[in-house]
Image (cartoon, rainbow, N blue to C red; front, top):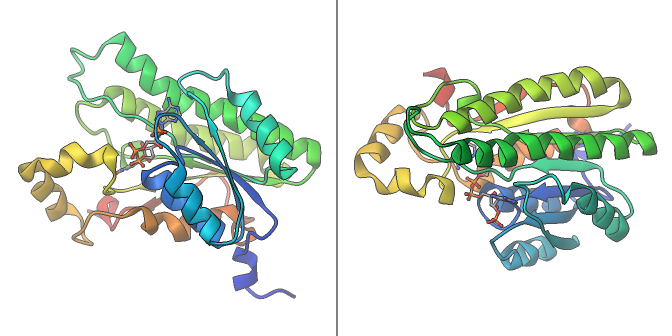
Length: 256
Ligand code: NAP
C-alpha cells in the first residue's frame, strides 16, 4: 500500500489554472507542478512567461491560453485545447478573479456584472465543463475554487465581490452534493489577506495596512506560496473524502 506522502503526488495529472500569470494563480501553478502535474494556464492580460519558466524548472510541462473569462464563450476551447495538448484534465483551479470597490449606493450595473461574470458565472461553467469531462472519462477529478474571507464575512464597499465569493462557497457545496458520487471533489480555498496586486491599494494605505496586520494572528500578509499545501492537498488523492468544504488559509483571521 502506498504511503501517505505518495497520496499527495500528482504525477501524470493535468491541471487547468485560471489567472496563472501572477499572484495566487502563479503560486498555485508552481505548487501543482512541484507535486507532479502538467499545467494548462489561462490568463488574460498578464504575460505568463515567468509562470512558464517556474513550472518548466520543476520538470513539468506548461501550456498557455489567453482567454477573457468575463464571458463564458472561451470555456469549451479551454478544455478542447488542454485535452488536445495533454490528453486529459484531472484538476481545475478556478482562481481568476477581480474586485471593484464602491459604496453600495453608487456601485454601477457594470461593476456588478463584471465581477459576477468573472468571479462566479465563468467559474460555474468551467466547473460544468470539467465535470462533464471527468464523467465521460469515469476518472473522477478535482475542482478547487478560490473563495475569500468575504465568503464568510460581509466586508465593506465591495458588494459585487462579496456576493460573488459568498456564491463560490455555496456553489461549491452544491456541486459536491451533485458530483461527489462520481469521484469528483469540489472544494474551495479561502485565502486571507495575501500580498498580490489584488491588495496593492490596501497595502499602500498605511492606516489600512496597519489595521489589517494588527488583526491577523500570524502578524503578516500571506504570500502566494502559502496556498501550496492546501491546493496540492485538494488536488490529490489525499483529499478523496473531502467534499464541498472551504478551507481558510488566512493566518488565523477568521478565528478573531
Ligand atoms: P491578482 O494578482 O489581481 O490576479 C488576478 C488574476 O485573475 C490574474 O491572473 C488575472 O489574469 C485573472 N483575471 C482577471 N480578470 C480576468 C479575465 N477577465 N479573464 C481571465 N483572467 C482574468 O489577484 P490574486 O490576489 O492573485 O487573486 C486571485 C484569486 O484569489 C481571485 O479570485 C481573488 O479574488 C482571490 N483572493 C485574493 C485574495 C488576496 O488577498 N490577494 C484574498 C482572497 C481571495 P491577467 O493578469 O492575465 O489578466
